[in-house]
Length: 379
Length: 81
Image 1 (cartoon, rainbow over the protein chains, first blue to last red):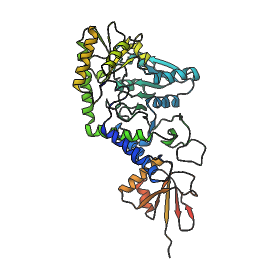
Image 2 (spheres, rainbow over the protein chains, first blue to last red; image 1 turned 180 degrees about the vertical axis):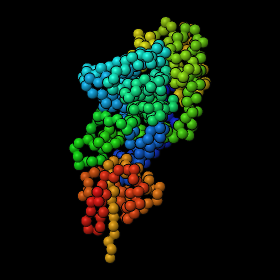
Image 3 (cartoon, each protein chain N blue to C red; image 1 turned 120 degrees about the horizontal axis):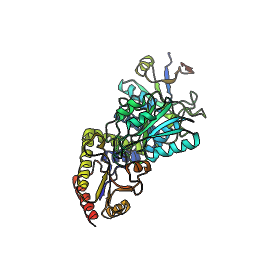
Image 4 (cartoon, each protein chain N blue to C red; image 1 turned 90 degrees about the vertical axis):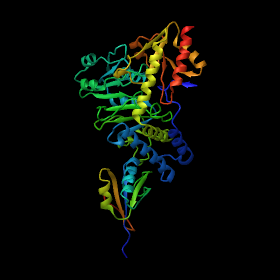
């Protein structure tokens, strides 16, 4: 079996993830912050320590500003629906995932927000001049897909930041977190949204959002927090304001394990290994007749993510995916929940085959995968 | 006989309770995390209970906002703000 769908979720998980998860489920199991007993307190401590560790990992100043969510989509929904008000002007790009496009489209219809789309090249790189031209005096926020889930393009964050001035920068970092260095303070990111089950190696069901000090959002969920229980109003204190209801403590425990794995392995080593895997796939596919590759050209700043999209001429991606699946090679085909990105790169009508290696993918895996693609392309 | 003084420090969130817990453990302060006494607050969470050392403790955790501080003198709870 060769798993090449790490952009959807990483698999397998490191042993640190599984041990931390097992330890919680077997030995702790309490509901954090709700009761005074030892197991409840221990569960709360796991969440606290994970919040501190993750805040440090992203270069955040204050761990109470790191909010845990169900997934990257919920983080983006919280940022977008929590920030934007009626008639606000917002800019996004033509490389976005539907976790950005759908809440924005909803707000366009429901709240009359004004939405502008900054153009991107067919390699997925944002046109900074176009972004500049779209900026208005009252532009509230700019939402950027940091790394494309379709072709792996990483956007030039510093140029974007320089262009948008004081507008709130919302960054969809679902693909870059754990695969590309991010420092929320130094990079000037106001709202950093990401999932934890991809390259941070938690199990599924966990995302996070870090908010800068000046930001105040409307919560998405209201309810019990274990704090201020005498009040029927939502607390205003962080992180409780945005975390009503029983949290996903098992996934949070597993994230602690995932972050420990990154520490033990070395973040630079992980990034480098993924870069090499990406290059070997791109290089291998480039040499196969009948294969068309999409995305940024090799060895540019924009091509560091381990996300490769391609098609085999005269074959539908679904057919290629079906044949790969029969060989126990698992990729993802179609539009990858990103219709606007596929329009930008010119593959909207059929989509692409996407191969996304992870830290545990080996060179032999890639060789085998390329061999099967050669065979499929010949037929 | 002088009665024992007990202090209860209440925080806004369990996050802050555990932040204080981490610092006070590091500073080797003699304290306990206990459920918030129902007569002090309706919170279902935990608070810091300590015997003396209040001023030292306040200094250690000066960056964390405490919600309330109570002194129990053996008979009554006194709200210290």
